[in-house]
Every structure is written in C-alpha cells, then in structure tokens.
Amino acid sequence: MKMKKPNEDIRELVRKSGFCSWQVANKLNCHENTYYRLMRKELSEEDKKRIYRALDELEAEKEKELSQIG
Image 1 (cartoon, helix red, strand yellow):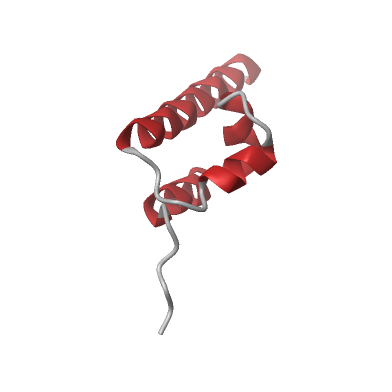
Image 2 (image 1 turned 180 degrees about the horizontal axis):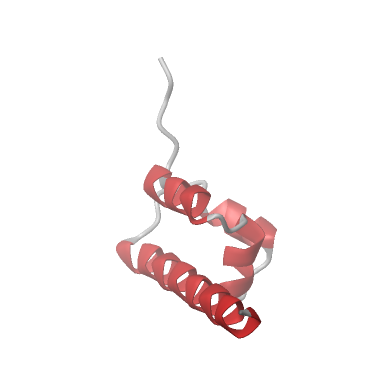
C-alpha cells in the first residue's frame, strides 16, 4: 500500500506546470532546500495560496517571454 505524501496536490500541480521546484522556491524567495523542508508537512491554506500565486506568476512570465519572441 502506497502512503500519500503531504501536499500531494501541490506536488502534482508543480509537476504538471512544467516548472521545477527550484523555480517555485525562487519565486517564494527561499532556498530550494527550504522549499523541500516546507513540503515535508502539510501546508496551511495560506502557504498553499502562496505557492499557487508563485505558479501563476511563473506562468505569466513565461507567456510574456513567449509573446516577445514571436
């Protein structure tokens, strides 16, 4: 039986986003290792919202870069 990891919803969202954990950590202004430690325990709703916002910002930056290219 496979045990569910804490923050599985966040982990899956980051995986599907195509961004790396270090990019999310960077956007949160923390070190990658700090981000991994945060993910060990279930995050509060406020912390999850911060990660959602970080992913939204990364996506917006990516779209902006792509629109400037072509």
